[in-house]
Length: 383
Ligand code: NDP
Ligand code: GDR
Image (cartoon, rainbow, N blue to C red):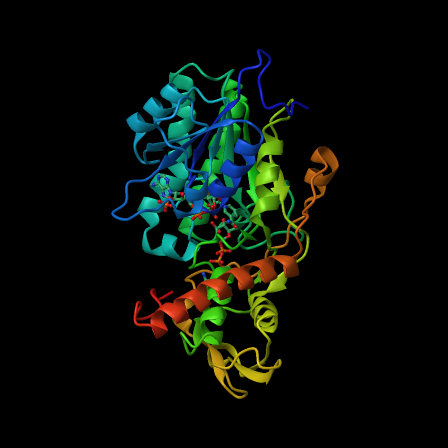
């Protein structure tokens, strides 16, 4: 296994990350910079700053040989991708960029296909056009959503796919085009079939972050109630830091292969809510069924949460958050990753919740203080 930060001639390795401004991109950039890589990243042009997750890694581009170099670009723009790959000459490309929200993919199916399915094809073609088949390795951010309506439990590398959303269908094309270019052109191309992974940097509209942020805001009196969709859904949740380590490991092998990355344990969304609330000092009880289900505060630990009273209803179900086709249950079997790569998750479910709640509580406290002194009006966003 090659785990050196330089190539055979002692030159620093070069990585290109699409989606560097996202959750995984930010952790992977940190990880690779720590290993001594030069990291190129593609960021999108936006009307406001979108580099919050990587600002701590920023390097003044005016210094000689910066380790982190950002390029404007987009996975829908072939010539831009070819030019960035030609300029950066990467040893490893990590394709993490995507329209990654499953519910949003039902609203924007065509755009999701363009970015999530044709985007990776564009990169693989760029590798061919530039004659980099032997030099540049390619990692595709595949997903447990491929299993959708599950055909086998737990899900492993050989479990048949049954995608249930435009997002998953697009990612299925990306999965197979990665396999196909590996077989057809000998490119070192691999799929990491990652189950859900979270962190304090998780986007605010994914269920875990929506819960930790919403409950922290409720605890600080910034919000009264959190509206949720299908809280019976079961997921296998790990921590993003553990999962980016595995993305890198997959790229350092003698032979490219696809791997399931998961914890092997699943919980309901309801359980995630209960444990997050407990972390804040609130004991919750769910009452009712389906669309009428509510979470009521039945106990409060000490003086910890003055904005909430026993009896308050702080979670309600809003069918608006149900999906046209749901993935009810996902549970991964990471045996291959453990056996072949010695990988296992180091951060537990409860440690992850604790980190997320603490981080959102700190943000909510700052927000409450600014609101109290008239510097902010309200909590932004409807999720
Ligand atoms: P995020 O949504 O946090 O990040 C997605 C990244 O892709 C952002 O940097 C975003 O840019 C960028 N992006 C979106 N559209 C485009 C585009 N058209 N061109 C270029 N870049 C674009 O996702 P995660 O970090 O959570 O996930 C990383 C990858 O892993 C994604 O491909 C996701 O589908 C996949 N995945 C994630 C799992 C998870 O549980 N987190 C599990 C399995 C797979 P911007 O910041 O400007 O929006
Ligand atoms: P998922 O993640 O769809 O698994 O995709 P998400 O956190 O959005 O949903 C998980 C489950 O929670 C249910 N749910 C809600 N979800 C959201 N977002 N908001 C709600 O209010 C809500 N209430 C209940 C959902 O129905 C679902 O069952 C994530 C993304 O990161 C993908 O990019 C990635 O490929 C997969 O994980 C693995």
